[in-house]
Length: 177
Image (tube, rainbow, N blue to C red; front, side, top):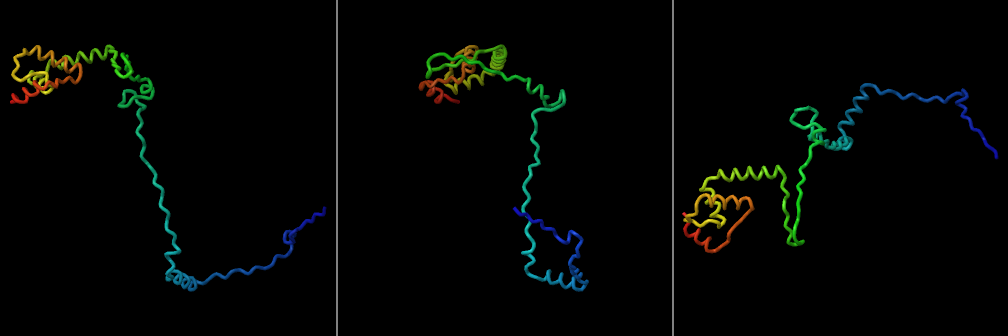
């Protein structure tokens, strides 16, 4: 196993070969070279087009909470502490004929009572129009107002109740003012 060590003689202080210094061009030579480069038709090829800058979205998303107590937004703690209302349902009957009933709590009961009071304040002309459009009232009927009000209240609270009796529909159509 023979190994050889190679040492560069320049590192040991030997003479370095002389290099020729490049001559600096004079002012007139610089001007001529500049004019030649500007007059060449390949100038557009020499200039590279700038790549398009990527779009940066500077829009800040609005947070759902703030840091001020009694501010317009809730604090983080208030936001996390707020509870969602969970409605409980009980279902009865068979799978296809399922009837779902909302189990009422105090708030729901109070809401229904408020709705009943609003219904009682309706004018009789509005009540008659509503009942006539749904076929629950014949035009020219002599039914007392309190009975019409009760029918109206029950129709509103039970949902969309309609009567499709052809004789009532025909009577209301012919006697419509």
